[in-house]
Image 1 (cartoon, rainbow, N blue to C red):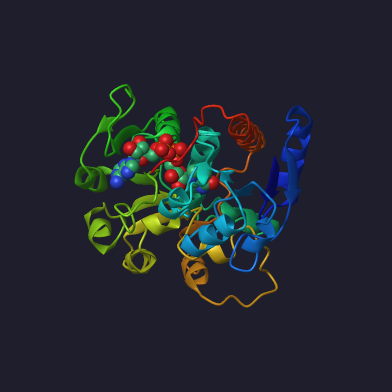
Image 2 (cartoon, protein in one colour):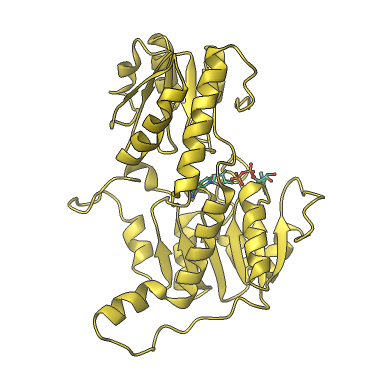
Length: 329
Ligand code: NAD
């Protein structure tokens, strides 16, 4: 089976190439180009393509993949909100993903963002480098004894809940489907979570229901001085409302690994470019906001698991076995 890997970086190639000898019958072609209108036709002659979170797999692209004979989309990530599943299924294209490749990788990054934003570590580092050893502007708050609110208690939310417990926090959670076996959290309604939490961390997927879950109305319900962290998907937060909330001093700190306009330049070096829009710049203009560029997953362990599961998914499809990681809806 021939697979075309779209949007690859040197680290993708490193982790997948290591595994190839263990998967006879599968050949891979890597291309740095991401999948979009102009590049979808490159898939001609490939039975499968492999794509990542920043790929556009909307209706037209899936139609083009179907025209080129593609039968399988391998997502080398957990999320699939960027895939038009209805169209894929209409053409009989199977979509597989990598669920839970390393929940701890993302949860640890969520806590790193919370701590950095809270204790201004990013600023302290620069200040020390410039021989400025004064502490003004760096004061934070203790997490110990405070309340963490986890929205979405799947694999990553649970890992984050355990980390928060380790910090001596009370952990409350909101989920459409509460997990009765999760004994380290107390489930509450969304409104209660917003009202009680000192730290709110988002871990639910981006769906029609969760788009702009954090908006002017929900921000209003939060405690003054709350810390908000988003490592899930940018679309969970209505950015203009977040900016308004920051201006009104609602937040002690905000840590974002994902944000609404990221798709156009995530994972790219844009340091020489004049950016076409300004959401990132506006957010970064606030002293209490810390941003990273979708790197929650980026650990050796996670990349190893992503490569292994993606290749296992490909092999299962090739051998006509059960597809346990198929995305059906
Ligand atoms: P998961 O499927 O294990 O858990 C998601 C949880 O959210 C489930 O418990 C589900 O019931 C809950 N949920 C669904 N709709 C909800 C709603 N409307 N309100 C409240 N809860 C709701 O997923 P996961 O592996 O924990 O991943 C969570 C998200 O993290 C992914 O969807 C993805 O967007 C994001 N993610 C980010 C990175 C990164 O690098 N920053 C990496 C991997 C995943």
